[in-house]
Length: 127
Image 1 (cartoon, one colour):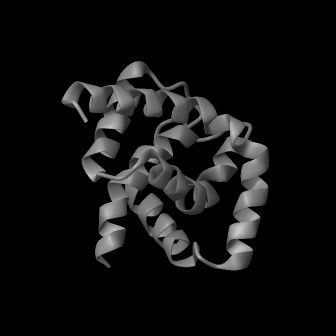
Image 2: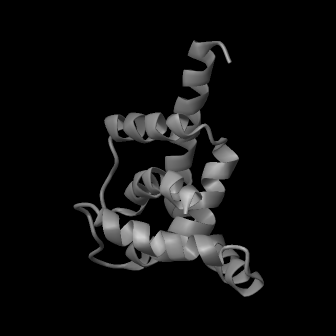
C-alpha cells in the first residue's frame, strides 16, 4: 500500500519520542527535517502519532525500564501499519483517546520543539 510506505519514515521518526532517553537538539533537528520532507502539516503528523504510533509504543512510556537504544524499524513499521488500518474504527479511536488523555504529557515537549523547528524552517524558506 503506497500510503503505508510514505508513513514509514514518519513512524520511525516519531518512535524516538517514546524512548526512555532524553532527546538532544540534533535529534529534534533530524526529526523535524524528516517531517518537513513529508509535506504533511504538524496536525497531520500529530494524528499519525496519536492513532498509529502511540497505540504501539505507549507501553514503553509506562515501563520502569523502557527501551532506550531505539526500536526495531521493521517491528515499528509492521505494528504501526496495523494501527493505520484500524485507525478509523470507533472503539479503536475511543481507546486511543482515553490513553492519550493520561499520557500526552510524556510527548508534549517533543511536539513543542518539533513545531518550533518546523515553523522556523518554513520562515527561512519564506513560506
